[in-house]
Image: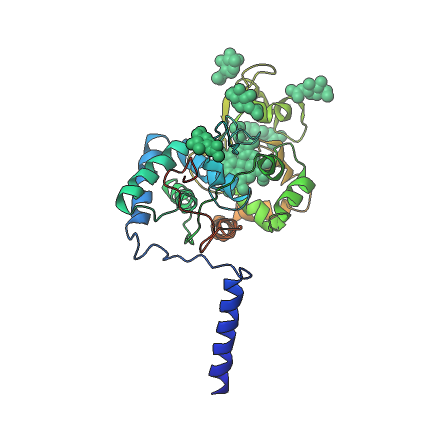
Length: 320
Ligand code: HEM
Ligand SMILES: *[C@@H]1O[C@H](CO)[C@@H](O)[C@H](O)[C@H]1NC(C)=O
Ligand SMILES: *[C@@H]1O[C@H](CO)[C@@H](O)[C@H](O)[C@H]1NC(C)=O
Ligand SMILES: *[C@@H]1O[C@H](CO)[C@@H](O)[C@H](O)[C@H]1NC(C)=O
Ligand SMILES: *[C@@H]1O[C@H](CO)[C@@H](O)[C@H](O)[C@H]1NC(C)=O
Ligand SMILES: *[C@@H]1O[C@H](CO)[C@@H](O)[C@H](O)[C@H]1NC(C)=O
C-alpha cells in the first residue's frame, strides 16, 4: 500500500538522518528496563536516605541537576573534578563553595556500578535524584526520561556565563532562560525550586540592607543573621515559611515582598511575570504540573545519546 510504503521510506530517511547525527536519539522512560531494572528503585532509596539525614540535601540535589543542564546540557559535566591537567566547573562562581550533593551521587554510582557495571550514566543519576528529592520533600512527581550519556569535557567559562546570577533583573533572567529555550512562564515555574533550600548571606546582603521592595520586618530579621560585613557563609532559608516542604509558598512570599534573593523578588515587582506568580500562589496544582513539565524540558537540554560521550565509571573522572 502506498501509505505503508511511504512510511517505510520516511522511517528509512529518519534512520539515515539519525546515522548522520542530524536527528538525535530520544530519551525514553524505560531506558534501563532490561539493562538495569533496579536502577530507579536504587536511586530512590538512596535519595530518601540522604534527605532523611539532612532535608536540605533534597534542595542541593535539585540544584545540582539545574547547574548540570544549563552548562553543555545534562551531561554530568558539573561532576568532573579539577586535576592538574583538567579544569572542571566546580570552581565556577555560581558553583564554588555552593553546589552540594556530590557525595550522594558518588554513593549512588558505587551502588549502581556493583549492580549493573557500566550501564547507568551519571547524568541520568543526577536527573532521577532531582525528581526523587522533590518527591521526598512532598512535592510533585514527573516521569524522568533516560538515556543520557556522560561528557568527557566540562566548561568553566560556560558555567560562569550561562548560570543566572542572583543580581539579575527580570530582563536578564528572561534572557538567561530564553537562551536555553524557556519562556517566561517556565522561568517562573522553575524558580519555584526556591521553595526549598538555603542561600548564603553574601548572595542576599545587598538586598536586605539596600533594597526597597522588601518587607521591612523580614529584612530586619535577616540582618540579624547576615551582618553587613562578615558572615558571608551564614545561611538563610530561601522560603521563610516552609523551607523543607516543596509547596507553592515561595510564590505567596513574593506577594508580600519576602523573596530572599534580588532575582526572586524580580519575578513579582510590577513587571510582566507578576500575574504568573499570583497564579501559582493561588493554584498549587497548576504550579506542580507546570514545574514537572519544565523539569522534563530542562532534563532534555542537549543530552549526549547513542554513541556520544561515555558511561563514566566514577562520576568525578573521565574514563581512561
Ligand atoms: C532564576 C534564576 C536563578 C538564580 C539567579 C538562582 C540563584 C541561586 C542562588 C544564588 C542560590 C544560593 C546559593 C548559595 O548561596 O550558595 C540558589 C539556591 C538554590 N537554587 Fe537557585 N537560582 C535560580 C534558579 C534555580 C532553578 C531553575 C532551580 C532548580 C530547578 C534552582 C534551585 C535552587 C535550589 C534548590 C537552591 C538551594 C540549594 C541548597 O540549599 O543547597 N534555582 N539559587
Ligand atoms: C592527567 O592527569 C591524570 C591524573 O591527574 C592522569 O591520570 C592522566 O594520564 C593525565 N592525562 C594527560 C593527558 O596528561
Ligand atoms: C573557590 O573556593 C576556594 C575555597 O574557598 C577558594 O580558595 C578559591 O579561590 C575559590 N575559587 C574561585 C575561582 O573563586
Ligand atoms: C548599599 O548601597 C550603598 C550605596 O550604594 C553602598 O555603599 C553599600 O555598600 C551597599 N551595601 C550593601 C550591603 O550592599
Ligand atoms: C511584613 O511582614 C510582617 C511579618 O510577617 C507582617 O506582619 C507585616 O504586615 C508585613 N508588612 C507589610 C508592609 O506587608
Ligand atoms: C553570622 O556571621 C557572623 C560573623 O561571622 C557571626 O558572628 C554570627 O554568629 C553569624 N550568625 C548566625 C546566625 O549564624
